[in-house]
Structures are given as C-alpha cells and as structure tokens.
Image (tube, rainbow, N blue to C red):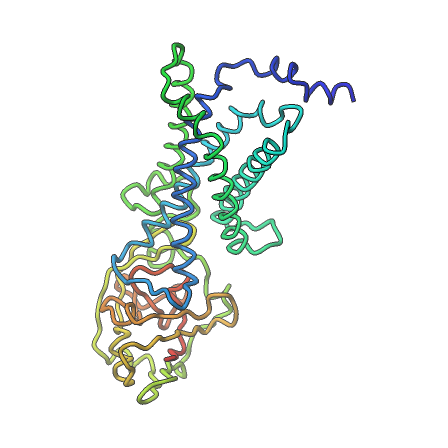
Length: 375
C-alpha cells in the first residue's frame, strides 16, 4: 500500500518526470496537431459512412471519379500518422493524468471526465482502426458501428477539452520560450515519425510511391489481373458460373430482361479507367471492359429517376447487394464489367459480370452479379 500510494503522490510524480518536455508548450503544439488530425479523420470518416450507408435524402454524385479514393486514403493514412502524435501527447501529459487528488471540485471533476473520455476514445479509434486495416478482429462487436458512434464521443470530448484549454494553449503557444531547443527537437522527431508512417503507407493509394508501401496491407499491382482482392470467390461461396447463368433485369421495368453472357457481349462494349477504392484505404486502378448499365436499363424501359439494386451470387454478407442511384447509373463510366486489363474477368474479380462505377466505395462495386432490380 505504501508503494502504491507513493506512485500517486504529487511529489513522487514530480521526481519521476523532471524532463522539460513534460510542459504545457509541448502539450499545446501536440494538441493542435491532434485536433487537426482527429477533425480530418472525423470528416472523412463521415463521408465514408454516408457513402456506404446513405440516408434516403442523400444522393452522392458520380464525379469526381476519385473523390472516395482521396477521402478514404486521407482517413486511413492520416489515422496511421496520428498514432505517433497521440503516443507523444500521452507521454508529455502523463504526469497530469495521474495527479492526486483526482479532482478538486465538481467543475474540475467534469473536466477530468472529459479528458478520460478523450483519451479512451482516441486509443479505441486508432487501435480498432489499425486492426481493421490489418483484417484482424479480436473484439466481439461490429467494427463499423462501434467506430462510427465512438467518433462522436471523441469529437464531443475534444470540443470540451479545447474549450477548457484554449486560453492556456493560446498563451503558451504565443509566448516565445528562452530554452526551446529541446522542445523543437522533440516535436520535429514526432513530426518526422508521423511523416515516415504516412510515406510508407501512402503507396497503397498513390501508385508512384508503391515501392515504399511497407506498412499497408494491400499494394497496387498485386493480385489477380494486377488488382488486389479482399474477398475471393471461394471465400464468398461463389462457384464458376456455367452456361445457364443469366443477368436478369426485374422490378419496375417496361419489360423484364434475361441476358446471357453472350447477350451482354453482343451489346455495345465500352472501356473505362476506374479505381477500386477500399474502406481500408488502398486504391488500385484498372481498365474495365463491358456494357454501360444505363444502356441495359434503357433497353428495359426504366424511367430516368429510378433507383436500382444490384444483387450478387454471393449467398450472404452485408454487401451482397448494393443500391445504384440515378447519378451513377446514368454516368457513362458505370459499367456491367465483363473484362479487366484486357482479359475476361477472373472469378475473384466478379466473373462473369460485376458492377464498376466512379466515386464509389469498393464494397459497393458488387461482384458476381445475377440480378438488377429496379425500385
């Protein structure tokens, strides 16, 4: 008991943390960097969430083509670069986190509670995000749901913390210290570490730097037909489609269609250059051949404002079907793809037919299509 009490004694803590780096100025600059990083992650995370799960009133545009690849790449790569910032911040303020007594008044208790929520949610978001891009889920809860709702707790706690610390941080940052060499060296080291993390990850979304892609789980150019794959046909329980395969167009149509692979290849063919952009942050561009979705829907007599749902041969999974709104199916770049990079689609890329569309998350580029339902 004596030893444990000593660890929480202010005098004992002071003796253990004598570095000049455990001060308000270092904490303020790291806090500013973390505020920018978490705000960026929150905004780009909302974009990702609402592109994958749009409410009825929200319709995303099909252009610019690479918008999602930029926002999600920034979300994941920026999130990874935030890890060194958070660890440095926690090291800097560590003595204050364990100050005793834990609070001196009701107001101070509320302030400390906000800090506890901020630290806990920050660690949770970065740790679970890191597990997600590594495709490792050692937790029992649904990652997207937990990650989404915890982000609001984090931002709320961040706003409270900024309001409480604004005057102190402003005064500290605006005052030029006489002994700033150690602080500058420490902050530059933290910034360089974050920069190295970003540099060795950004190649997953930016092909010219793919050779430096050491930390990312996917690398452009690696995989069947030169593109990475998250879920194989075997993992999805999809076997090779035989001669009996048909793509059906049903629902609110002028006439239902049932098209064989030969029927689709007999229609006007088009070639587009579009990316697969995954929620884990990686982007890989491919050259796709196939039939424009709008041509097939017009042949079925579909009205211009209709919303359509594409269905996969995959037997289960949250993304075995996806909705395609009017801006996307009207876009000339949206294809029922039959080929990739000059070859017929490989099974792992969705053979015999898949959706490929601009500015759309990879999980919504539905593979192994079997039906297009007009709502």
